[in-house]
Length: 433
Image 1: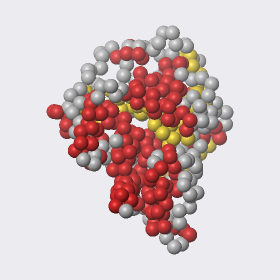
Image 2: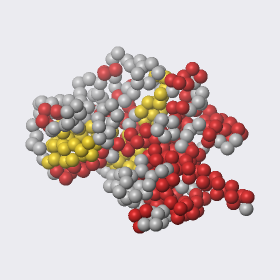
Image 3: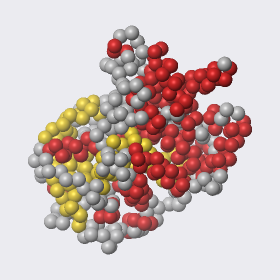
Image 4: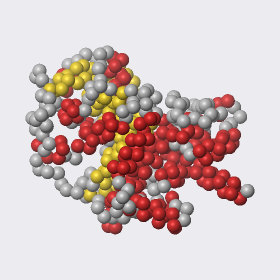
């Protein structure tokens, strides 16, 4: 089922199955209570472990909603999503990314849950174990367990993950955190976090290429000022573990756009980390690692309407939908793995994504997709994942010119769907012969 999702770029069981019997088999597997999410995550951990050996891995985590309102009347076990009205689920994946190249190494794990009740009036004072935000600690602990063969692991998250218990409980040798600050925390020597950063001198400047975000900003190059320093934050008075350390020393890297274009919101990131930041080079490295977080946004794009369209699935049980979403996350991750090696900056074997029978089809397709000039030849070492990605991108409509914009996840998903059809044709031709 997973292989068909990658090949066909859909989660619709009718389109995945070759016939009615197989469609029913897929449906029964999704509905089977013996198929447990915990066992699926353990299988993911076993696959990702050897793949990250000796690398510095960024474990990027984030949360997204699966809005299932269109099918809510016939689907059991859903909760409410962000607007408090529509029905659906939340998914919280952890993605492994190579810190040096930015290549996607695979899916580490995923939490899926339904929000079935309103927030407690005393939510602020509850212990972290009673809050929905516990998912951030669980995601980091999953990364610590699954990525033990890595040389170093840095867990990266956005502002919702700025939780004192994370800073207190999780860091250790070879295991660091990098989170965008959310709270103006009190400092042990007096004063507040944000004001302390404002007083630091500008250490350097950096140009950031910002992609367009419809309705929020246009594509542009932003010149930002970089400041950095060490801070010792105090344990919050409300809701924190009373057994936590009274203070935690962190490093703060502030990235601020001094002169944004009219009508554009200035870039302003306050990045807290447990990594040492002793000079401007260290600070810029922190910024580079944080920018890798964009890859999990691409994962969500590929999972939803611009790719696999998981919100269109018509399975009728929330538990079955959770199993389907895990498979869909894996399929979307395979697309991102192609994206990550697209530029040839990291050499990965073909069997990260492709089955043995598909390699011959890739080889046979290559001559018809290359042009006569050297610029239109596949530039990557044969039988590597980057070599295969070039072929899939050409099938997806990319023109193959080095000066053209590189293919994105949607182009690769489209190319993989066409590649699947060609593989089926090759198999049928062998059968007829």
